Image (tube, rainbow, N blue to C red; front, side, top):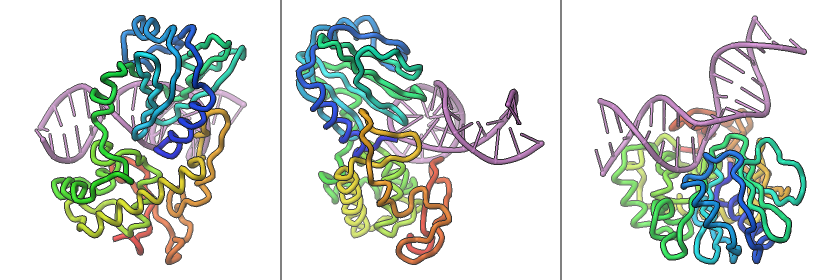
Amino acid sequence: MPELPEVETVRRTLEYALSGEKIKDVVLHYPKIVREDHEGFIHTLIGQTIRRIERKGKYLMFILDTHVLIVHLRMEGKFFIKTNEPLDKHEHVSIIFESGRALRYHDVRKFGTMDLRTIDNYLITEPITLLGREPEHVDVLEFHQKLKSKSIEIKASLLDQTIISGLGNIYVDETLFRSGIHPRRPSNSITFDESVSLIESATLVLKKATDLGGTTIRSYTSSLGVTGRFQNELMVHMKKGEPCPICGTPIMKMKVKGRGTYVCENCQH
DNA sequence: CCCGTGCCCTGGCGGC
DNA sequence: TGCCGCCAGGGCACGG
């Protein structure tokens, strides 16, 4: 499940590989991925050149001449660059360039989305306006104020992209463990000092993971076969029954907000 | 507004 | 081996 580090890895790879490519054609093999008028989407993209690729939270933003293609990979979305290879059954969108190469969007679960905005409004319209700051840019006072106004579990708040953006299920578990905070704690019970700790932990976890090219577990691999290495650094996520790296207590697995959640019941309160 | 629930989707897995 | 049912989950729609 691509979170900020995986999306950033994809962004860097694709920007290096695709900057300057001019779009010759677009084919929607499974049109529902595109949350726009399909004909207009295709017509607008054709003839435009990829200038650069930006990222905000877990969204990729392909900056073109007049428009911006906004992509969310959700659970299993990934990109491949191919030329004449036959279409894979899970490739749902093909963006074909004048060079003959094509960017193929591959998504087994079909949860990913594509939106189109103009260069002038992509940062001041949804979905980007719904995003809170990323951990390294969070104003801790503001963050703590938001937590104080919420009764939902702290894990749910950390997964809420309007409160803080970039974290998903893996990195939230790692963040909470490093701060010694139980995922079930009500958000409004989190102290200011704990808010500071959470932001520090989240920032550190995302930075380390980004430096290692993200996390590769289950079916997720980065585009172009790039493989992350942060899975070797995980302390609790996917570690059910294994000893806590701090105290040795077996890691427990539970459900929080409907998500598989890993916790050391001895270290996290 | 706030919060919880169900939905989207399919490969993989456990049970028989 | 085959089939059934369930699970995984980010964001969003919807209802209380």
